[in-house]
Amino acid sequence: MKSIIRKCFYMATFILSAVSIHPASIDLSIAASLKEVVTELSNDFANMKPAVSFKRNTGAPGALATQIENGAPCDIFFSANADWADYLMKKKLADAGSISVLAFNELVFVGKSGLKVNGLNDVVTLKKIAIGSPKSVPAGEYAMEAFTKADLVGRLKYKLVMAKDVRECLMYAERGEVDGAFVYRTDAAIASRNVKILFIVPQRLYRRITYTMTLTGSGAGKKEAADFYRFMHSAHAKKVLVKYGFAVK
Amino acid sequence: MFGFSPSDYSAIALSVKVAITATLLSLPFGFAVAYLMTFNKFRGKIVLDGIVNLPLTLPPVVVGYLLLLLLGRNGWIGRTLLQPLGIEVIFTWKAAVIATAVVGFPLMVRSIRIGMETIDRGLIQASRTLGAGRLDTVTTVILPLSLRGIIAGSVLMFARGLGEFGATIIVAGNIPGVTQTIPLAIYEYASSPGGDVMAMALCGISITLSGIVLIFHEWIGRRMDRAG
Image (cartoon, rainbow over all chains, first blue to last red; front, top):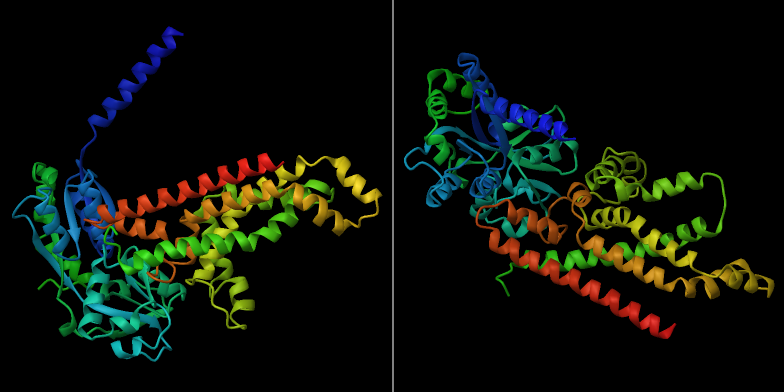
């Protein structure tokens, strides 16, 4: 019996030590809309530096910020706005001065191609519309901003299905469970053929969609994370961002 | 109180409404299935037992997803039955009721069965030999004697319904004021920075409601003990 316990103990020690010599791992918290582009770029980076590996956590930036606040491991935080990065900064969870602009995007309305919807005023005639929950999804915040400016909030009440992130929003539209959804132009580009962009929300109705990248407290102390942060601002990274439809200036 | 927004109040009201509707809707079916399972021998009994109890062990997300595939716009029932009749289910509060009913149904059937199994078979046989028809026996002997199980099952199902999340979020979505129940509102607050206070306040409401239900259950149980 004793020898079995001892063997188990050796085994556990072996497994634990095997984990500790694992190559440097960078934890990324990524806005849902950046999933593909950051995955590709982090793979490029890992190919250049085989000693580095990535753990990618995607979701609504607000939800990711909450996770970081509650102690989730994260070195670099990607958000579709600056608000949640500022929030982490105030909580002293992000490295002051590391908030930088990564890219820009546009808000569009997607739905079935037959639908006669050409602008925000037509949206109120529909039955169900998906947006990201404005409490944690920037795409939903931008949409609500546009509704407020266009004075449509009252008429859209009880029609808005709150999705947990912008990709869920898109999925609702693709599956036809809602008439349409407010997503980013880059999301619409990867949508299935069932849906297409019906109109682009006029820019004057909402702040410009600005993606930010931030080193967290743990990320600032990790050389590999700082290297990847710089890599994300390289000419190569910009080229890949543009390939996925993001604007870089 | 706690600075709840109108949509939070409607989430609380909706949770209660959905749980009550699902429970009342399931009662006759729950009673019928429990009766069938307790007093009858028939082919496929094990299969029925399995189907009824499946939602108890399945992840609620699976139940929700299957319901969505069934009732959705492209779903089998959705396309052939609901759409021609102009009935919309998905992303309405009706979907929340259906999801809650399916998930809570096994709990109700189990409780009623336990109630029915304790009935002295002699009483049932006596009523039959004294000339009562099958239906008569059900309404005058079996129903009153299994009342405790029926109430216990209803309370259990109601309590389970208050907390239904996994199946509901898939089929009913998250529409503030329309389909957003307490668990969905908590989920939304919990995943937004600075939402802790509101999430906790709604948790408090949840705990209070569950407490009330349990106390009610105890109280009615004691009352019936005294009466019996």
